[in-house]
Length: 295
Image: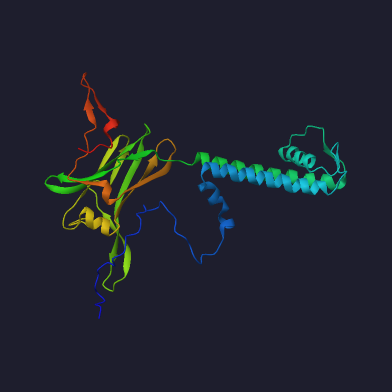
């Protein structure tokens, strides 16, 4: 009879490593209400997909009104009766407010359709302008994190260390950083859970962040990393998640950035390379060419 408290993992290959927030799981049973959140979807689409959606909507709207114009063969002056092409380009002119004067609505039906199209064009222009402005004006962070973290001695104690830098030459005010260990654990009942453990840092906030910031977590008996190794972290699908936020002085808005470190991206016994250097004239500067180097 199997002991229910046995925490031995099954002999199956571990799932592929996925960084926190990098992928989206497949949802089952969730109500489909994408249209209610269309604004958020349009803001989060990649730029190419966003422009593609606008182009498809534009073509569909013009095709729809072109079909309505074709229903009245003589409704557009100087257009070939029943020509979808002429009706389509007349729709383009109407929707854009161009008014070339070559084709014009002649019947009451065509005038009513063009009136509806002009109204829809105003709405479409307002929505597209608002979406473009929201995407362009959204404040973004230009914070760079070291590609690898290290665990090395600091004042005689093993310490997790990595660094960040503000790639913009401005100030981030009241910057804060949180470091979290995420890993799989097995409960006493044999159930698997994904647990979050906060890693306290020596300095979790700074009033002004404009150059570099070395974040450090001391690994002592109270640390969730106490006694861990690369192998144990790999076995538990561990990940160290880093979230940094602050007030951008230029935008006067809150910005945030995040990164994560997989177990094989942590160098045990290493040391972050010194990036503060002095030139021949005795002037100190930061050498970002060594920002990601580990000695």
